[in-house]
Image (cartoon, rainbow, N blue to C red; front, side, top):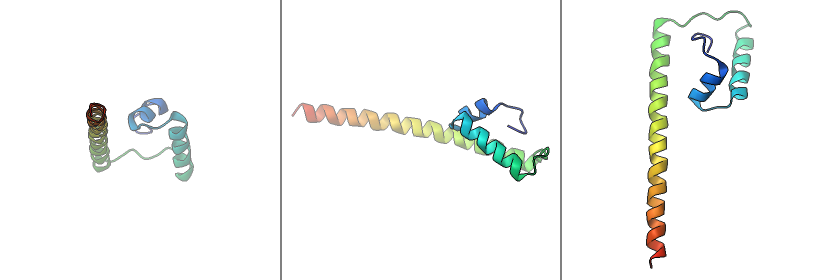
Length: 84
């Protein structure tokens, strides 16, 4: 948020946490860093951040798929149990 200028709400939605929790994290980080302006990310840090964001998105999609697959197989099992 600090480096990208995005809002707490946008970042919270992207990482799947509540806005209040993300706001508290940001407040704590600013307090830890002395409350001053934070140094911008260098190229390596920015590349790592982008890699982690992509990885996070991939993991979210995998998790969503696995949840749907589990629900599908559970419904199949229930259908099989009900027909006996």
